[in-house]
Image 1: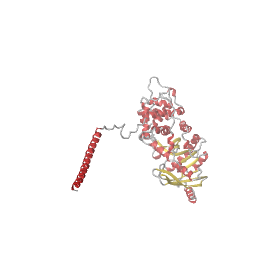
Image 2: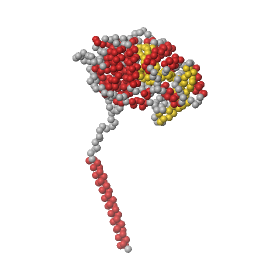
Image 3: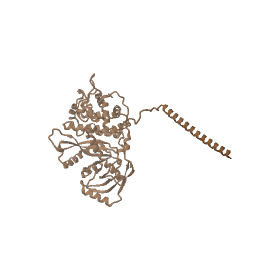
Image 4: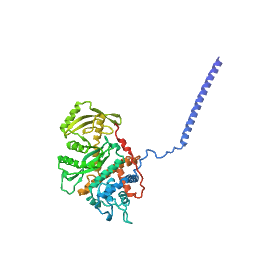
Length: 502
């Protein structure tokens, strides 16, 4: 028994020794494999990076490409513009002159289009070798002295002739350019109730230097009519000068007196086309409504208590009596989606002198992606039968601020503006002519920027309009486009996608 017991213990000890040896062997094998893996990893070459690490930078704006597309885009309407330019300076003898009439006026338009907001800036680099041929490409001037390098005219010569320009042809020019946009079907989605929305407002043009006047009488003022769109165009179609005034009461009288002349010009521009005349509370009066009725237009004016107190109280009382005439305003908010941001109320058949009008009250309490918080009222002769129509009237009425933004853009300093309020010339006639040419340049820029420049901005890191204007200016001064091939260029209508969805 003792031998059997001792044999069993020996077998158990052998098994323990074998298990211990197996553990040691596995441990040694594991260490060797781990070391081999480290050595193999150290010997493995690093993987090469493909391309540039990090986010790629945006491309630079290409001014040369923008200039080429500008010449191709404007080429179909050049003959009409140059014909009116020639008529505007018909007294000038072109046969014995170095520059054509159209060349003189295009010098100002192209300078303002490139944001050269002073005469010194226009003259500073006008002698660049490529600028003269590019100006003459727009003016379609073919005659030049053999062997002489083409140059652009100086602004002193231009403004001396602007003193004698015939303003009626510049008025016709704004109307004809607007009609070309209509024929190109650029404004099909800018109609409200089948009508163009025309906003009236007055602005300061410049100051009378050396006149000895002070206050408001020192300023030159003008009443402008602009066609606005939901994508925030403000296309000038007519301009009427306003006499200076001393106080606010005279200002209102001067604007209402200018309304008679403005109505005649708008009638020539639109003919039988439908028009909705829009303006601030100044025009919400008997004369403003009579002017619209006489010409067969609709109206939509800002309505305030201080302008017509009795009518305002009557409208408020009617809104309080009929609680059913209310509707919600829906807007897009970034984090909350489409939500109710406010409401509208309206009153029908409100007596206003000899007229019967409707009043729409808009109260937006929550700012949306399309508009901020707002409260206001509008008086109109358009039918308001349901909440949807009331919301549309409120949204179009709020678009009146587009004309204010248009003035701000033209008044900005440096390359951000067009030179409005800068005195280009002491002569009042030349100053008015320069203002008309500025409106033409701004109209062309708005369409060109929305339809072509925005498409060229894809892939560019946050380009501004002033940046593109500088790039365009550089290209016109350093690249001669007179030998380029004119091809058809179509506008990109992506700007129409900014229209708010009902």
